[in-house]
Amino acid sequence: MSTDPIVVLEGLRVARGGRTVLDLPDWALPPGGHAVLLGPSGSGKTTLLHCIGGLIRPDAGRVRIAGRDLADLSGGALDTFRGQTIGIVFQTLRLVRALTVTQNLQLALRLAGKPQDAARVHDTLTRLGVAHLADRRPHRLSVGEQQRAAIARAVVARPALILADEPTSALDDANAAAAAALLKAEAEAVGAGLVIATHDTRIAGAFAHVLRLETRA
Image 1 (cartoon, rainbow, N blue to C red):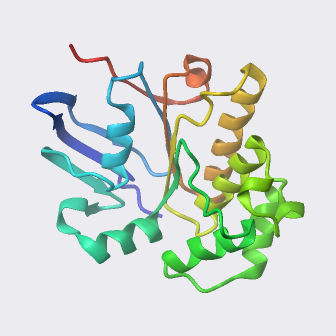
Image 2: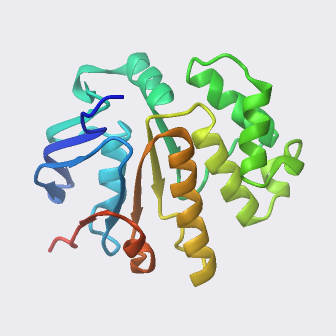
């Protein structure tokens, strides 16, 4: 197993409308490490998470994931790398409404260039406690069930890195702790690094690595 950091950030800067929304010095996450990006709304957490996921490009600086400089990848090559290497749990979950839970996971495998694996899909859903919902479409799931299905989709292809955007924002204390523990457990199950962007200080103590961002004037 590589001992190189799974995430390396070098001097990132992102501006929007002439205003700097993210200005971050160097930061790295060791392989299999779990980190939380902590800060209030407007501090650039989601922007940073999207930079790490290759969803947006910084105006300055570099992002290296699993040894690859994302600036060297574009178009289909970046999409392929992201699908193979990064699992993302978006704040709005983004499950495909027209597909069943199983089909959502099968799509994730296909986008990652992995062979269809019914046993892997079933085992992932079982571990997350939603195997009995495999044939349902997302709109027929509760919010908690949708979240578990979204986590299952993010980990089914065994990514090297899992990203989650505000996964506990709408949850009470007990469920916030459970959601954070679930993400950590799933990351450990597939040997992945984990980065959670949140303003939720309740879960910060559960993470060895905390990167605090401040709202910029």
